[in-house]
Length: 596
Figure 1 (cartoon, rainbow, N blue to C red):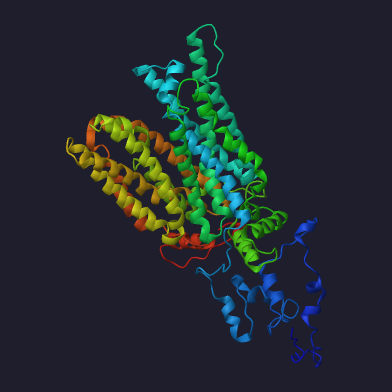
Figure 2: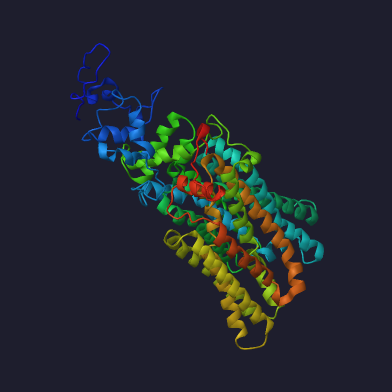
């Protein structure tokens, strides 16, 4: 680099200061950085400032810091920008709030695909257990002695709904586990819980015959209830941890696509459960225990593929310096970049800027009271909870759980009901595949608005078809409206609420925020499921119209409140939330003790 030999500052003795030695020869700068692989006791990660300063040796400012003017390097490289000449020095002080903070973000690297593909096996198990109680229900009830009748119907309904209660428990327990032991170990633990739940469910159908059929029925029912509850705990935990993990390992421009893979895999699990559980396959007497045991296969596969499951670099960034070095190595693998790549170093810098001290790493993200006291986190929580509650109050699960009863009671023939059941499940998977591509092209807000419009129009069409039975157009319109309703849901309102927590919360808030959001989803699911049959009996063919009103109101909410997160880094999104909270006043994201 150049030196400052022509700058002679006068001293009190009238002498001139000797020309300063080139900074590039200073022992502080000539000491090499410690490589990641060595993992010594005392280490310092190479930051963006380090990279920019040492690599821009052509700059006239290269020799000025840190010896000539103490602290100038920090100012010259302010906000991860660098001035390469005196004329450009002022540019280093300009705030960077646009979408150009990270220029190189990586693509679908082998490490990223393997990690995401392994993690979404939890979503496959979640979808399978969500849908495995419907197709084989007649055979299961017959073998367990739960015949038709009001009391037995209530007992069977409890077997189904205890899954939601277990999911609520899982949502409340998993945040502190994920923050304490990390996302990777938590996902592996969830897989173990799925194994246990699947074993209990399958064991309910192979109980040795005791003294009386009543005892056999009671033991089998208890095992089934226990299995459903345990699988519910694992499923609730999956809805918190897996979307959060996918958001944390993804580059901003792929976060929507990979986040949507959670919903896609869940829909695939539901479809597999609906097909394999048909009476023609495994949904008959004597074979349904084998059917229920299939949920253990993805869990066992995930445990076998555990080496593909990398720890979240964003979680590591909020812990210690040693863990930050480990995060840099993982991030380089995920992005397919060299370890010393400026893009990797810069992205990790931004993660550390956004990260607060995570539990187990020298701090605590705080409980719900702390979450609500943070204006930025509170706004993110309000958006996420509203999206999750409206997702369930759109009536989507009533279509999946009660469509056969509802359509039959309103005069739709059995053949049409079967066609609707098959097409809506296939359509749900197909449209979710499309939404994977659309998520990072069209954006979250626009896709949710398309969902709202499509679901509202489909509800009106379904109501019209059921209100005019006996006409030739009734059955085709009913089929088109139900399939259109499900496919409209799958475009945006299905996947987007699950990926929003990873985009709207700082890392030290993310686990708790995702937990509260998922818990509200499961609670709304339970409430809507319990209320639908009385509502159907009261309103008949118009029973879906109240859900259409909710969808229309949600469209207004999305337009006015939900920020667009497509392609933005976490600190950009949090800045927008904080600026909105401050009612348009310029807001600077503060980082006292590592928190905004």
